[in-house]
Structure formats: structure tokens, C-alpha cells
View 1 (cartoon, one colour):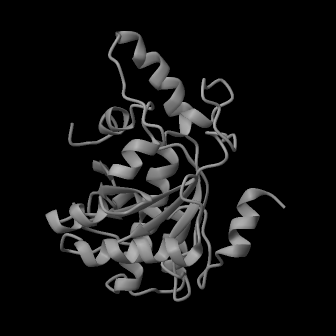
View 2 (view 1 turned 90 degrees about the vertical axis):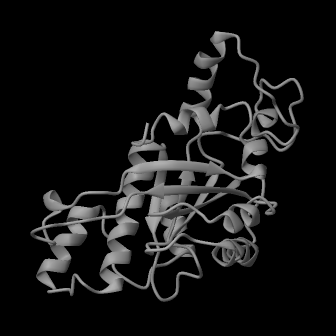
View 3 (view 1 turned 90 degrees about the horizontal axis):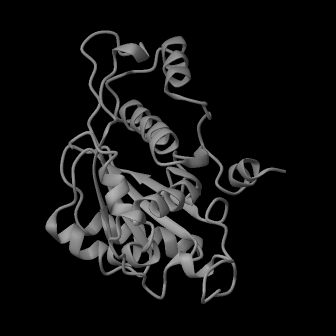
Length: 240
């Protein structure tokens, strides 16, 4: 059983699983799904986020498990940090010194001078847990506290897990403050709102779902230190 199958077994979906946005829209057209419903809009946003993470942020084995029984998780998979590590080595040639915190994942690499245990594979050992908030207002402290509850409920390994909250709008100041209190690595991504002026069943007519901004909490900044993540992720944003 491969990694994807294991994830599906543990975090099952209460709805059908589709490979991408286009296939989901085909299903909606055939089933005459109400495109004005919050369920349709929320699910569509989740598929756009899944695509964004896979194509821009090197996420893999991503499974959408949103639904009535998702236990707070909309998407789960692995975050392949190896490409970011390789790029960080290239960027380090400019001579700019990067602070490496003691909690950095890089200390768990075989070639690290500290060689902390257990060894961690940047390509296969980092879990990515995603919650999407397709709302018209900025998420606040209450939504962030919910994220912490989700991680505690599922008992994810703190060192090997990154939680992402993805929404069309950035966190409030209270939300950012709450995010920074968490002992888990948390990241807030802003993926632009979706819009369609004509055929809502046609993938080609949809716009949005672009990465607009990224915010890492203090724990994530330390755990991912040495990878130049903020620099690399900011280069992927459309707002640049």
C-alpha cells in the first residue's frame, strides 16, 4: 500500500474524490450541482488549493478529504522540502548568512554537524495538513485556535507536521497573534477568490486561486530555518 492509499485509509472522505478541478466540474455538471451553494464553492476552492500546493509548493500525495466527517482536515499529504533545500544552497552563494535555529529540520539531515535523531527525509517525512476557509471575511483568532485543536486531536508529530490555513483573505491581527502562540508549525496562505462570469461548469472560465501572500508563524520560521522559505515562497506570489 503506497503513501497515498494510507492517507486515504486514515483520513477518508465523505464525498467523492476527484483528481483535479476540471473533473470535479464535469461531475457537478452531470449531477446538476447547485453552483451557488456554499458546498460547491467550498469544495471548488479546496481543489484549487490542492492544485496550487502541488504545482507551486512541491506538495505530493495530496488527498482531499473535506466533507461532513473530515475532522477539521480538508487536504492532507506530504510536503517535499528537498527542492527548497536545493534552492537554498544555490541562494546561499550570495554570502548572506542565514540563522539556523536548534529546532531546524536541517539538523536532522545525515550531513548535519549535529545529526539529531531521528533522521528526517526532507522529501518524504514532512506531513502537510491543510484547512481551507473560503469565507468573505478575514479569519481570526477563533479559526486559528480551531487549527491547534485539529492537530492535537489527530496527534500529529510536531517536528514533522506543517499545518496550513488557506483563505482568500489574510488573517486578522488577532489571528496572527494566535498563530504565533502555537507550538506547531503553521502557515497562512492567501489564495485569491474564485470568480466566473459565464459558464460555472467550465474550468476554462474560472479565475483565481493564485498565491497572493504567505505568513509563517514563529514555530514554522524556526523549524524551517535554513531553507530561506519566506524568500522562496514570496517569489511565488502573484502580488510581487
